[in-house]
Amino acid sequence: MADYINIYGQDILAVTSDPANPTLGQIWYNTTSNTLKGGGVTTSGAWATGGNLNTARERLSGAGTQTEALAFCGENPGGNTGATEEYNGSTWTTSPGSLTTARQRLGGCGSQTAGLAFGGTQDPPVTGSTEEYNGATWSPSNSMNTARYALAGFGTQTAALAAGGSSSPSEATEEYDGTSWATNPTGLNTARSFLSGTGTQTAGLAFGGNPVPAVGSATEEYDGSTWTTSPGSLNTGRLSLAAAGTQTAGLAFGGYTTTFSGSTEEYNGTSWTTSPASMSTARAELAGCGTQTSALAFGGQPVTAATEEWTGAGAAVTKTITVS
Image (cartoon, rainbow, N blue to C red):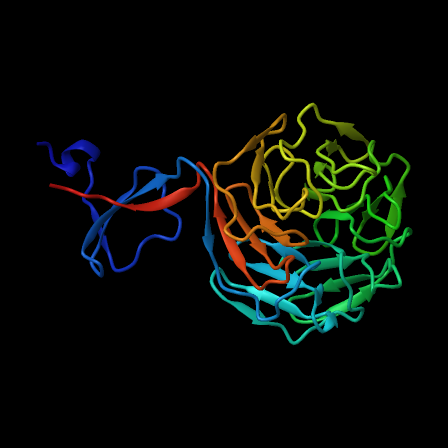
């Protein structure tokens, strides 16, 4: 049998810990576990249990990535909260910075060190309040033009987008430039609340929600000025779901149909495909962040602190190589 060095022209590297981001075909020997390992990719998606939130809650919002996530606001048995937590890939830590306006069913986007919170309800009143997070504290900014809750929000702290929402289902769309909100004259084609969305201010995705009187499945794409209805609708119409990813690689998970759902679907820019892997904890009113291949789900209704980590098909993973 040929030696590895003769095939690839290099020795197998000996390391004490696995590479953080292995490439496909990379081989190494882990001297700590005394195992031969290599870099591969997943063939199907799967959810795994992560660290629980310190404050169990529903109707919260989030931002960031699977290893650098931000959770904020929501409602727990004690009422509305402005509490903020940061996730490092395994554990949530409560930030000393809470939002000035405690609220629920708000929009959120950005990163762990540059987050944005907007809209929501204090049950009552409905608010358009906007706050920015710098990794330690929240600071008030200019309010939205249309106060609302149960809206979709995505983008960055300096280029965010808000779409839809209540009090009655809305098509209103607003863009944030890091200072102020501007109303876009072209709103969603399907007015709705309790929807979700992901992407950027110039390449956004909105789906699901509650276009009275039905639970919605319609998907729309935003190009920075106009919404276009996609031919691909969610396979499971639902409201109060969460999202991750981009306009051409989106992820939808959780939500409510006639019961709590753990269903997971992937969007390729044209159509949705249902994953055989559902969330361990079916829930609605949850928060999500990350990418189509590396997402995070946390909190939700029934009130929970549960966190789940998604590894999608095609994600880079470490595999142990068995030799005989």
